[in-house]
Length: 94
Image 1 (cartoon, rainbow, N blue to C red):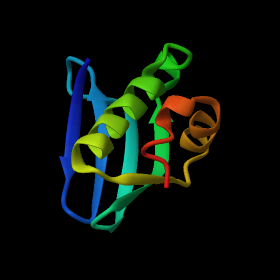
Image 2 (cartoon, rainbow, N blue to C red; image 1 turned 120 degrees about the vertical axis):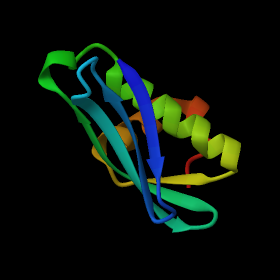
Image 3 (cartoon, one colour; image 1 turned 90 degrees about the vertical axis):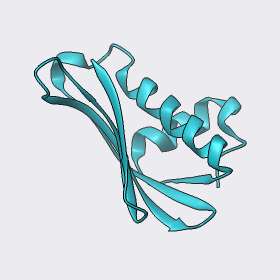
């Protein structure tokens, strides 16, 4: 699987494709302002659930936020839960 990232300045997403180019997982965000993004959606295909794919997506989002000095506002339930559980993410949490 290949990790991809798209961002048009208003919204963006990290997603994984299989060898045929079919999307199997995604995590999307919206730009709130120049300092913060809203993590609003996570989806993983049933065939990949329980394999840590959502965490890989979150790790890419967090790396992006750290590189750009952004804060993440979690409205997606997965991201909200992970922010509560993993205190290493506190630096990017809004």
